[in-house]
Length: 621
Image 1: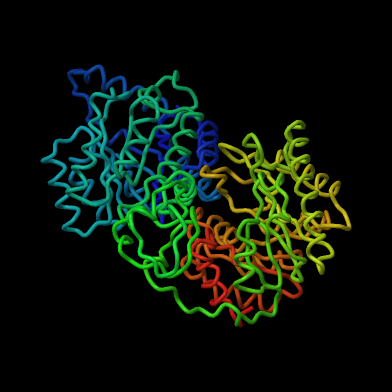
Image 2: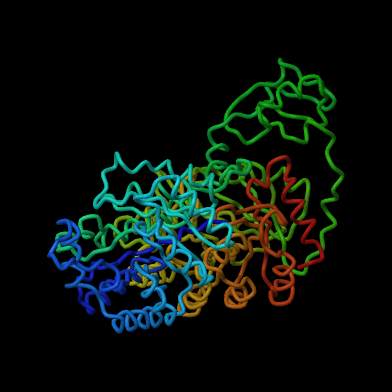
């Protein structure tokens, strides 16, 4: 689970005395996606000492500050109006009281948090009054020595206060060489909750603070850095602050945890393609001993890892293995006795196959339907070299996502040339499907399952672009309709993997959009449960409500588990969903459709993971 950084837009006195400007800054802060806006309140008459009767003046800096405060400080009534506005638009209001009288006035505001400014870390009477309020306390440590910080820390802990220390350098703007960001790590040794209040130029240092464990980031916000006032120069304008927020959210995703390393889906895809496996150097007979003369290491990494090379030497083969075949984990031990022909389902069931392993699986199991997963190179082979007989079972086809020259299928592309190329590529799939149909005697109108596009490289498209893309996709599929086949798009996850790289998905993610698109265009879908689970995880959606929205437009199911937002195709039970709930819904609602277990790399080791998934689903759907 991602630890979310709490981001504060410090407006302070950067409103320069204008209520309208303050409201505009609150609105922009809300739009930027921050968690809170922060103001300052002070009783100037009681806060600063009176000048003596002899006319002794304060230092120039203090006089400058007093002059600005007298010009720009808000009245208490204005603070109340601002607090009320923040409640209306649902953004948290925080305020720093600079004196006890102002703190007492804030009692009217019913605040969740009170901020203590760096200048008041040593103001013990004020801090003791803040502690009495039993609120969450945020306290900046700028301008303070470590001894002073530790003394206040001791007092806060003694009173069992809920507080966060903010590392801070109180220079406006602060030079990077003075910030000493690693002091965050030292503060975390004293107290677990540490954040960062930044006054530097730019955003890089504040983003780095998140990577070092800052749980709160506070930055000054201004509409114009050239305005009068000491804080503007150390503040971020809207475009910078928006970039800061989005960057922090990106860093949060990347931080992960310090638990055991787990391969990501993208890494596993690339490992399959780039790593090595143990393969047969020559034909190996059942009960023949594995030796260095009959096995070798070759790419790709789809079989037994070379880490098992020494373990395999000296063991006896438990099967006949042809030259060039992968070895698997089951070659290290005797295979299990799972009975493959005893599955009972109310729905038409099948497994995914490639041309080259179809006959192998056909000799092992007799499903109702075969789903051929095509690569673009399959489009140019003679499928009858692999499918020898007329077949009684049904079949369907899963179209390639990737075609020649690294072209991803996109039937929703707003680029006319790319759309034309995608239409040509899907037409090749259709042509091959019609040819395969001549061998499958009982299949009248084969399904062509397709990931139809609608992805983008670096970020999601806007709403108007999405509407346009849906229109293009509808027209594309409509132009391909035929009585000889049926194209059914697949529901998609928010962040799909495309051969080792991740994209942003814009279409056919939300269940309501799937339903509306199906209804408008008279289109059915293949629903992938792992894509559904990741979508529900990301958008906090209810799985049963998702299924209830889309089931009327479902023609085929890909069944697999998922974890988080990017681990798809997992074995049933290995994800973080309640799969019994999913199968109960399927059993109750779905009729006259087909399904396959879509376990990633399930065909490996003689289909072991397919059989395990089918065993789980047996008599449940």
